[in-house]
Amino acid sequence: MRPAAERRRAGGRRVSAASNALRRRRPWKSWVIELREVGRTFGADPPVVAVDGVDLTVRRGTSLAIVGPSGSGKTTLLNILGCLDRPSSGTYCLEGIDVGALSDDERAALRAHRIGFVFQSFNLLGHRTVAENVMLAEAYRGLPRQGRATRALEALRQVGMEDHAHHLPPKLSGGEQQRVAIARAIVGDHSLLLCDEPTGSLDSLNTEALLALFDELGEAGLTRVTVTHDEQVAAHADRRVRMIDGRMTEEDA
Image 1 (tube, rainbow, N blue to C red):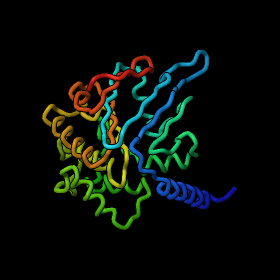
Image 2: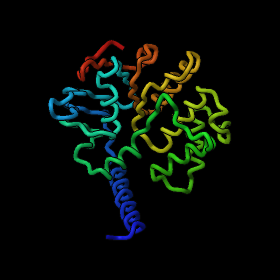
Image 3: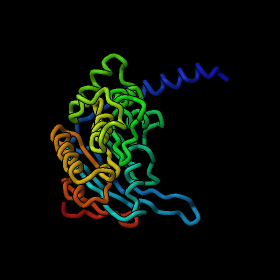
Image 4: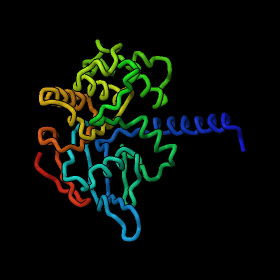
């Protein structure tokens, strides 16, 4: 067996090669997301159907809200869109790339370079400065060490938090922490922003400010899919779909 250090270097080369391949294979289509008859089941006796034959297309620069009761399949679908889980059936294409045909390394590279995640709980490191939190995301995505501080400050500028770059997250308000979390999600050249209850920890004023920020990011071409129970957030999206028992129906936005 090869030494651990050699295995790590080999693994790093594979991920780097996958990252470079995916960057080269970047088609500029109008559809960012294309799902065809996507299903996801768990177990086998009998299987639990979490997502059941979902068809979905999402155009670049638009926003989609997914609503529905707990257990309806929303989170499972979001995990599939984020390349955190594989569908049991059907096809998922992200910017024309068939995700199901990718290796684990390629899926990890796709997730790192194309997809940003925003969660309700912010998930910031309290002992690291705002800028350091964003730069750590750059390191995870394999972005070059040179220029990380500049890219982090640019992402913070986009969300109006550049003046807080050297603050610690616990010193910020909930709305400010969520803006930092969004900067961390969008640093680099992302195509898709996936949000899981992003306003759940915010008051109404900060929710309105966050929705205005999402509008600005959409105008810049970023596509957003949000799972939410918040009717204000759902109504703000360009489109709204409802999931019940793993199936999806279109609703008026």
